[in-house]
Length: 290
Ligand code: GUN
Image 1 (cartoon, rainbow, N blue to C red):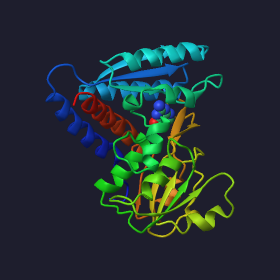
Image 2: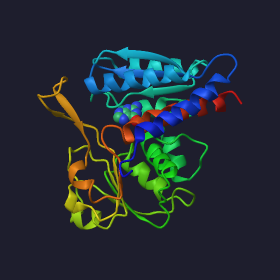
Image 3: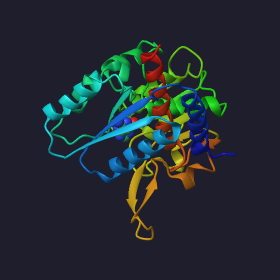
Image 4: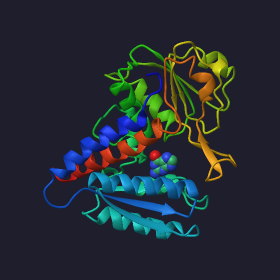
């Protein structure tokens, strides 16, 4: 099938992790979520992660703070969770309100509990191609999709649109690594890139991670390219019960006939991010208990 069923792949990973945690004697792996404010998307993401953790047999803890909390209060909670040996993984849902320093909060997490892979040490390990660390979940999920769907990156021209640490930059680093599921030639495009279409049309694998609804149109895609859509954008739609629908960064209707494989939104990369977070949490548990 042309469309890649990320939901199914994520569900397979959840099943594998459920079997693994079932075999653990004694306390199960535990992940702590920190959420600040009531941004509806963040509330929904954390709820989804909480639910998946429970399903796997990972104990979730949720710490929800008011929008107005100080950096000191946030730091104190991170310190407390770092010191708590029963907590294996810590996730701070991004974005934080603008008065808080997000990267400083990520860097305060014990790197061995940094299941999001946002700590400077874990980001550095990706650069050094050191697999001992934690890799940011969305880029790791894209690599996992390629592996499980038999999509080789070897020698391919991978074009990434977006340079965030969470997705674009980290995926570019993974794809250019010297090793299996990598060895790609990588171009990173961003908001200041000139002649974007000329570059994206050269992509064997096109990864869209810009957060702009349906920005990638059919004329930007080479015939037979693999298209990975990382965007999750809420756009108003009065005909929907919730008043909005989710669309990706790719115009799916235009891209689908041109691409050889494509990830839909929803049901593509999104569920993989949660599955990889759970995989990292089990890895953290194993590292801390070995
Ligand atoms: N916000 C959007 N994606 C992510 C993610 O992967 N981790 C965290 N912590 N926040 C996010």
